Length: 487
Image (cartoon, rainbow, N blue to C red; front, side, top):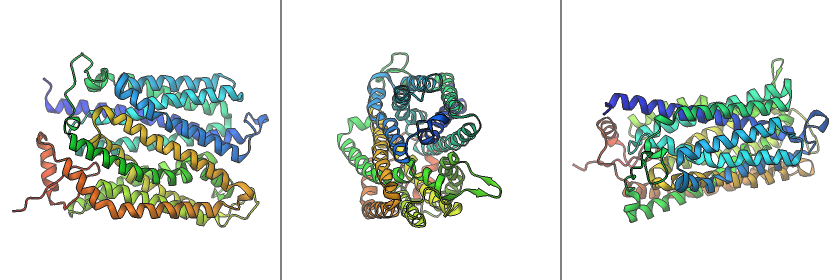
């Protein structure tokens, strides 16, 4: 039997390889997102589709809905039919096929273009909801280490989101859309190869078909499924927090999930730094770049709060994240008030102010998105986790679709409704999140009541939990219950 040290090294290497594969999958996805809208509005003689800005926003929204909506169906397939690891690999293969269709096929042909997008969306539907399940599988009931793993995982996602649009923008600028599409496909090919190499490190239960290990042994019965009161309470809490996530997804979709802010950055932001003009595609890298820079700072702040017994509960983190994201939409509305009506291009918004609004959105995203992914792996039964992860993506995709239509409305009539749309939508969403802030103490108590600290915690984990006993009604980001002794 391998010793604890070798098991820890294997676990670390396995999580690192899965996260590295996710990095390259995100390089692929965000590279494509960065050029879709620009490809749509580019004149046909320049290799584009020759569509209007409004049409480009709709296409971006349609693709967002496809890529984020299908995972709820394919997450169920990963949970119940093929298993999480097989779903990830199969999804990667289909995404590679979609990118190959874009590069080798005639992507200026509408049928070829949409067929490729559907292939990529289907592959994403299989891969995305199952990836967090693989990360979680390495840690079992070790919730605190699992929380840290999700932070690293989310960091890799955003490193990929930074690299993808920047490189895609440079390639598009100098070599055109064909080679930008190829770059996106190569990113996904790297991810596929890493996933295949990581297979021996993935826990045997994840490599087998649902209910069995890869060697045919039956899985242990999920304790959440056996405890019906806990199951009902956990589903209620997940559903309630899902509503909060939908409010955030609406704000995120209007600000960053569609091409709205990208096109604002292209036409109305002063992108001059010295004598260099920031490429339009690089606007897609602002948010993930801020996330990569801010995450270590946020981790230090959270550690400082933990030492003083003020570590914020996962529910509170989600609420604060949603508030910041809604505020970002309001700030974008204030900035767009400077845009003169009927003007197609004018550098009236300072780059620092535009980046500042993105900072609110980015910090909010750090505090809500990876936290909810980790909460799912704690509260949902094991064979429902990918379905819940898919539901999250569905909410983001569906509301991204709605946001794209709202974004198309903002550019109608010469942009007459742009500022008021951002201001009203952001303010209403902010008010809804305030209600969740009032409800958060009740939600925290319910989660802690039905999800006690595991009895079989290993010694290192037990030491960490003992250190957290000074925290009053609080827990790490994924919600480890900590009870104080009354004596």
